[in-house]
Amino acid sequence: MKFTLSAILMIVLTSGLTNAQTKKKLNPAALATKMSSYVVGLLYKGPAWTAEKTPAVESLQAGHMANIQKMADMGKLVAAGPMGDTGQLRGIFIFRADSVAEVKAMAQADPAINAGRLKIDYYIWWGQKGIGEKFAAEYKKNPDMKMEMTTFQLVFLLSGPNADSISPQEAGKLQGQHREHIFSMLDSRRAAVAGPFMEDHDIRGIIVFQVGSLEEAKKLAESDPAVKAGHLKVEIHPWWVAKGVWP
Image 1 (cartoon, rainbow, N blue to C red):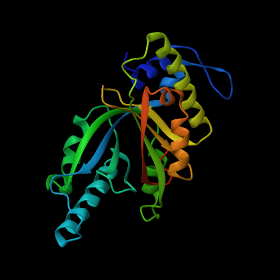
Image 2: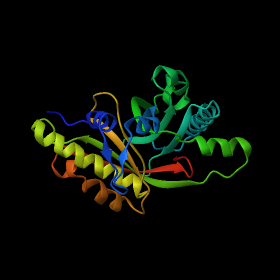
Image 3: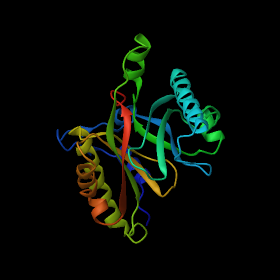
């Protein structure tokens, strides 16, 4: 039985749950109102990627940043930033949208994507409502305000080595334990946002940790019972994002 965060989410929304801190029953309908649909764009090195800082590359980067600003001004791009490591993944966009079609044309207008320096993969993601809203309102009032970037620790939850061998009984138990772990991370503010991808991908979900180091985020992510059991595994990247974008 494949262990998916989408399945966990359905359990969250269709059953009476207990909050780890307050021990009060959560209203499933009220919980649903706190979540929203987003499109996540993962930006990878494209076939024309080069690390050289040539005039052509600098021109593409300038166009890339201009397109980011344009998408933000349109109210669609609510969070974005580059990775703090040197792997294939170079950056992430989070769009306020219900479908890829809503944002694909504006994202594909990016000169760096058009030139093949970057390529983008799209995912439908369910996350906390209000990402980027307060930040956008403050920026609209004061376009000259300084945008301060800070490092968050981005955890991808992937299918683990035991994902297909778990029994239905054990799956139910682990789903509950995993859910409680996620709620605990959010309640304690160690995680800023968390949620599942809504389609069947190897990447099951995202947690954005706001802790001091990648090592601390790794320790917290790997303490998840589902990760310990091998039904999920984690991939962690430092991610630069503007302060104030999380709800």
